[in-house]
Image 1 (tube, rainbow, N blue to C red):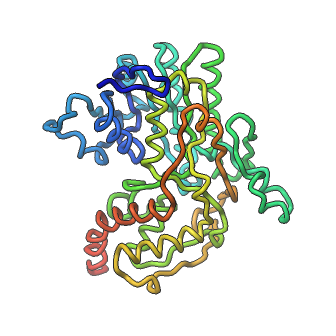
Image 2 (cartoon, rainbow, N blue to C red; image 1 turned 90 degrees about the horizontal axis):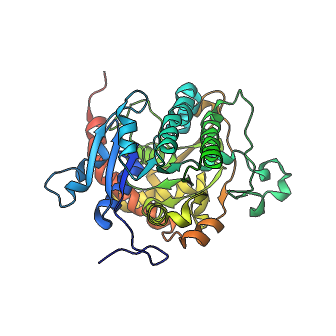
Length: 381
């Protein structure tokens, strides 16, 4: 039976070049594509570890997924893969806050310079592009500059794709290297659309979380690595260490379950007439908590998952400079306006925060607890 899009039209089979498709988001999108559509996934990345479970040639979808190990910085095969596909999805990025300070050059090159050929190839070959941007593009909210008495009103922190300004800190705050690089990429895409007719959709994720996010230091990532907040807190819980709250965990964030997010991306793929030319916030305003509240919820959820008493888990306050290094800066609150994505794609998030934390921490405990136990049992030198 033919699959129909939101306008009742038959959805054609697409060959989709997924750049950076072997990561957290890409692995979940690949699962969706092979299990629920007839699209073909042409995955481009430096590693296939997070999609290896999909690449077994005995699986029924084996003819609809292929992996190409290449670095887009220097491999001439990229243009050929884009040219032979119907749609390109660019997921490649450095998107870990700890790297923005310590690796600002690589952050800028990865998120802007390396995207230029992808955009150029899509424009020249008249291929549709879905590009992954970030909610950090908005920088600091207007509310963060207002007197304290106004800061409780959410309207000063709601971010709209076509209206909200992009407000960044000074050049010396290298934390904004990521957001600025992403903004320049968004502007380049829009310029190609305006001058050369590029078909594009830009996705702005708001803290998508779930299984396979980031890494656990010393297990499947560098021992001195600092992943994003969910994996960072998970690592502390797995090791029985206090969860570190940067500047007391006062910043507020919204969190979206990865499966809900992938449903939104699938709608963008299958409904080009509704998605082309749009920038979409993709988040869950109902799942807003402070980072401190997130830590408390994760302690409660992990106690249930692991069987360890919540009283044995704790938090500790650290300064941003001690945790991230000199030059770190942040916005205090970001709330996505959902008008465009609701109107154009009839999409709404479904999963409450406690449920998505439970699912994610079950995965983290099942996947990593034994490896960390073995690591911790080794005699220290």
